[in-house]
Length: 390
Image 1: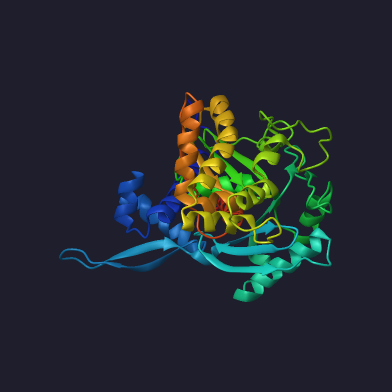
Image 2: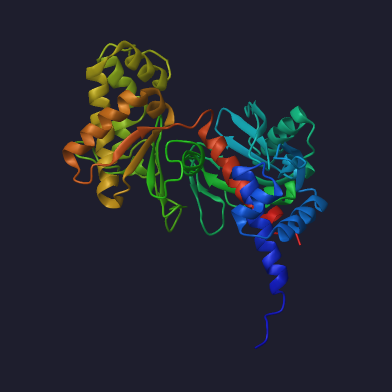
């Protein structure tokens, strides 16, 4: 019986990848601990570590006191072996972050895009500002992931439609890749928020859940079997268009605020509802999230009950179709409402939905879209770096 050519090399690559992932999740570790977790012999584990040290992927980061013998060296992944960039692009603000290969955020900056509509120039400037804040050269970045509002074509990776960002159109992705010279991915912002929730938040390790983005605009991030569900055209999750009782159906789908659910729970609707309950006035320019936060602080139960009932219409519709078990509320309104709003939405959904999902508020700290962009970029960078060790 013949052996398949290249098998030893493949095994070394698999062992290296497993060891690096383990050091990221559970490190630092001694050679013996690494062998115990991976099933490798001490000799093989030692060879593996030596190989990874030669590639500047692993280094000795300390010592572990033993029994009568000498202290054992502790090994960890070298944070500076690769960096990634994540961006959250909004009409009035661009947030950029740089993380090292361990996922540690080393820089975060915000830039005002006013007066500039060239996506390539905007991205280059924001990333350059973030790199300059830490002295990291842009040539050390292994992956860029950019979160934007709108529908991203799953076939081309370009933004197919974005009302808020009209300059982000077909062809922008190719221009970014040519200009930056590294892998660039554009992703829907709510999908990235769902990735952040699974990696760092209320859906940590959960394979099936739905993130409901409640704010000025509405969105849905769907995670099934540990994978994002984007839909055939990339339009999965555009929940603002959900038909709901009592609200008119849109007559022109090119009008972004005309969806039935958007009319029910969008920024204008929530601001009007708050005014009706004495939380600010109709002419008040206070952001809708701040109004909801005020309502929670003041114990405005009637307002919160009605807001929860409106949100429950969309949540229940999603629950009876997907039965995800877990719903995470995010966005300005969802995060501002906190546990008080989430509990009310859960109760309201239970009255009309037989599956009765658990509803919780987002637990992601900071900017969830930016954090999700970094999660996605790290997945790509680790695939590159950890698969090229032999």
